[in-house]
Every structure is written in C-alpha cells, then in structure tokens.
Image (cartoon, rainbow, N blue to C red; front, side, top):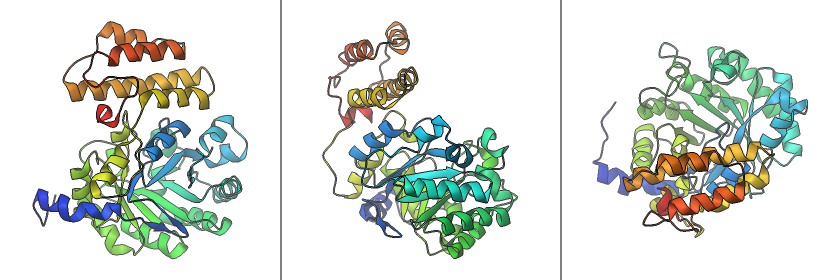
Length: 353
C-alpha cells in the first residue's frame, strides 16, 4: 500500500475535517460526509433511524431486489420502506433493465429521494443471478441498467461498486467514468474485488484511480471503523466521503461519532440500545422482529465486552438470546448492563464504542 504523504496525526487533523462538509447529490444535500452503508439484514428501518439520530450524513436502505419489489414480494416491500427521515435513499439490485426501471419508478413514487444501484454485492446468491458485483464482468450490460434507471426517474441516481470482479479485471475507473456520462450523480467504491469478498484489507489507495476517472462525488468504503481509518481512507483514495459498513454492527451511531470528530454540527442524541430494540420489535413482523433484535443485542454485547475487557456470562447471554418475550429481554439486558461501569437503562454512545 502506498505510504501516506503525512504523519498519522497530520492526516487526522488536516484531512478528517473534510467529512464535516455536506455532499451534494443532484438536488439533495447530505448532512456530512460519513454515510451508513446498505447492508442486507442489518440496515432496516430501526437501524437507519438509530444511525440518523446518531448523526450519520446519509443512510441507505437494505438492498431491494427489483423484480421481487415490483411484483409485490412482502419482504421487499418492508426493505423498501422509508424510515421517515428527511432523505430516503433506496438501493436497488437486478439484472434486467426493464425490471430496474420499473422498480426505480415505483421507488420514486413511494418517496425515494435518491436511488442507488447495487453493483458491489459479492454474495453468491446475488452474483449467481448476474446481479450485484457480477455486473462488473459485463460493463456494457451494466450501462444498460444504469441508462434504464436514470431514464426512468427524476431523482438522483447513484452507483455502488467494487474495484472489479478480481485483480485481473480492475475496471472500477472505467465503470465510474461511463456511469458519470450516463447521468449517475455519485459513486461509492468498496476497496476490494468481488473475489476477495471480505478477505484481506480494503485497498483505499486503489480507489484513487476512480477519483482520477470521474469528477463526481466519490465515497470510499471498506474497513473504516474509526476516525483514524476514515482520515487515512480519504487521504489515500482522494474521496469526498466515507461509508461505514460492518463496523456499525452493535454501534449504529458510529458514523455520527466519526462526523463529530471531524467537526460536523451534530444532533445531541446518543445511541440507546433499548430504544433501538423496541423500535425493531415495533417495525418488524413477529417473530422476525424478535430474531432481528437478538442479532443486534448480540453485536452490542460483543462491543461492550471488547471495550471493558470483561465477558458476559454464558448463562446470561444464552438466557437473553433465547428469550421470546421482548419485555423480558429488556429486563435481562438491563440486568447484564448493570454489571458494567456504564451500564444503565439509558445506554449512551460510550457504551457502544
């Protein structure tokens, strides 16, 4: 990886403040340059609300399969729901231009302010259907999808991608340039190829070639978990903003906390795990809500254990993770948190760090 042109301290002090600046996507302006990534099974309505309250500059829906969305599949209708926030950015995936265009029109009619096209998902269940990052194997077809979506709606269209399918076919710069010519308004690049999945380290420096290929707002993604990571990713990539993915597990306010360190003006709302859990239950169909809530509570406890250097007993954790009554689960979580220095019923962001 190329060496930084500044020391670590200089990077943070000189580069990080760029994230406090809003980014304009067509006619939409973000709050700052730290975004929450679209994550299947994670960034549902409750998670997006928690991230927004914590100060994220932009939050993106879970990936919505275009054909299933248009044909009324209940799961996709739920994923497409607005979180009731000032800006609704919705991500669509698919392989057929017609379905993508129809889904985009439906999303716009449903209140989407920005539509993001997924060309970065590496999951086999997505790429075997020639969607997600599989589209980077055929840029001509990828452009047909982009043209279809851009031509179908008036709202801004953005694109999320990887560096390429593998290291023998790094084509993100070409795709970005062609996407800009087609009318896309922002590019996000995860610093790995599809064949890497999440192995190794994200190559932020490799994203610099995309910066050189397009004048669009550029967001860098992959392995960004704190302000230092964010500053280094900006310095190496030349990007305008960062997108936080897996680092948000158990701490959906992480985007806002990074933005705060950058100097962004922030709403003073700490992350509250109890509010988040209740919102999951309220916004999800049961028993799915209970299962989803367990996943987030598990991540939250892992964060607490890492921060404190202490472990929650296996008995207590098992009892919490198998509890089907949401009210009883809250009582058990309160009991667990009371054992930690900062554990209160109104958990704050320091607890989630």
